[in-house]
Length: 235
Image 1 (cartoon, rainbow, N blue to C red):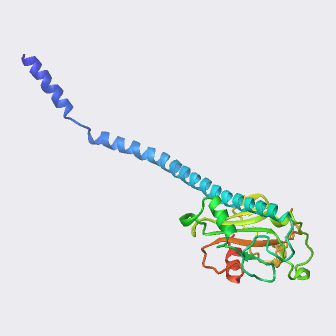
Image 2 (cartoon, rainbow, N blue to C red; image 1 turned 135 degrees about the vertical axis):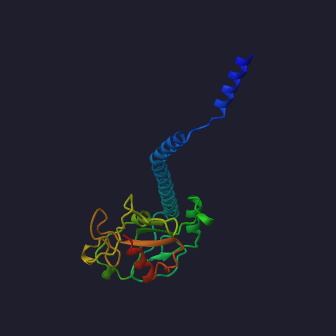
Image 3 (tube, rainbow, N blue to C red; image 1 turned 45 degrees about the horizontal axis):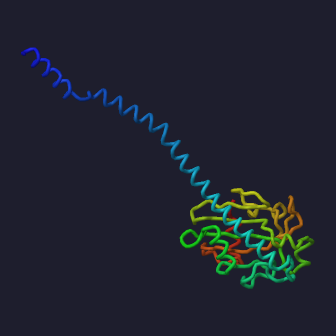
């Protein structure tokens, strides 16, 4: 009987003993090592997932814009009078290139709705460029060739989802973080002329006309120097 009571006390004492300070330190060190290994990987995974969603949203906007242009192409029979806007509803713009602000037009709304980027999700800035249909200053713009098909094809795009998001660019079928319109120290090395005729590369000789679909930048409209200086300053 006494033996059983002694054994019971021994077990009880062992159960109440808990961890020693050394054991607690060892556990904390192990947890710290695991955190050092797992946290960067987890953060990298989160950043990667965010980047993929960001690119997906940009692609959706571009796909929606091209789809709406194809619809216009079908409606017009592939022809549009020179000097008229391929995308209707724009504001009168610079005689240099006929660039147009269509941010509040039916076309722009359809693009954003199709991409599910409306309301709070509306991009900070989204712009596309197609083959120019502008008849103004043709001689000043230099030699260029634009087909009817070019006027309904998106060759350039600029996308920023939020004010703090990195800008991304669409150029001739590819997305990049590098701005093909970046302002260089030497104008001779820039691939776009003053009148937006492409001077080099696979699109050489094409003149582009820009349509601003979404703009929260407060940098002015697509017709203002402030907007273009802001865009060209990005690398």
